[in-house]
Length: 428
Ligand SMILES: *Cc1c(COP(=O)(O)O)cnc(C)c1O
Image (cartoon, rainbow, N blue to C red):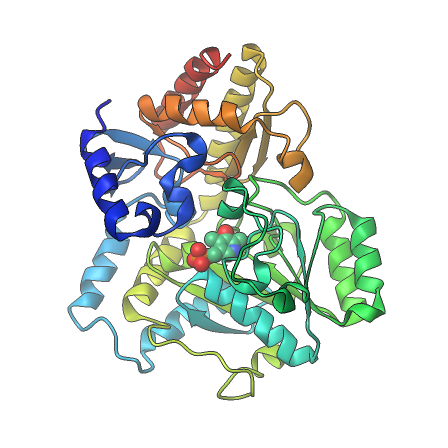
């Protein structure tokens, strides 16, 4: 494959944009090559500036569960745009999407829309602090909740990928109010939450971790977290920015039947436009301005285009059998990959929950951040480059998930299996 145009664009981009990208992982540093610049996408495919076509497993990091440029979403956007793109005033479409979200997620009685997942988690934590009058946030090593100051302590996603241990620019005064503990460790969890000196306002968790690669909650872990937080009056926040409308229509909370106090959403609910949301019990949500004293606002919040795209996306997901079909497709694909890995002799742990999966290059089970970090990132880097060269677009980091979408056909997945087989043969 030729990457001449992408290379030129990257040189140009780096002159004006830090690292040439507007989000760090896109620069592909950890996989040892330059990024391809995407100019077009349709269904399961993305096309780069040199005209190369790829089967896309990044899916814009989650939103594109229906594939790219779905006609219903595009039509909703056209229909909305002609009537104006932003008013900074209430619109009927906000009520429509809010109603859909409240009906879908068991924990949500009221919801506030924002413009990104980062804003959603940041605002949910402010609300939890305001509501409880306490300061400390407990999170889990390797979980990513966007880039707000409080969360850049042992965070996942790009923070691990680039090996940044937190971030300069985040004052110690803020870091000292964040406690990060191991995922899936009930003992440490209980000891931390029961420590009365800690003044804990909330616990925030990805109910399925997706930002250290895919790591499932072990049986009983979320249950324990729910019962402890309930007993101790600590606000439990599920960060469902990835899992919301992904694992089931009601998110991970429906999938595992655990009801958090607050839930953060993003990605899928925007249908590919910039959206986030946080919601939960009315008793807590009523503390937000203008009804309550906890301030949070946004010029483009509830933006008509974003609402229209979100409504169109959710309508598509309401189709009977949608999640069963996605599960079956993802399950079959994972099984084929597992067989390929087994036959190759390459040490691979394939973790999967629904349409989220990660092949970790390690011989040990991956259940938390420490075990994820044992993965051979050089091997992943080579695999990434080999797959790219064969038209398979994976996440440019070992510590991200592959997303299965409704648009990927049997042929697309079969191609990915074949190329994986070829790539594994050439890894050693
Ligand atoms: C992507 C993500 C975020 C941040 O969302 P942005 O829209 O990138 O700000 C927060 N939490 C989780 C779990 C995510 O995957």
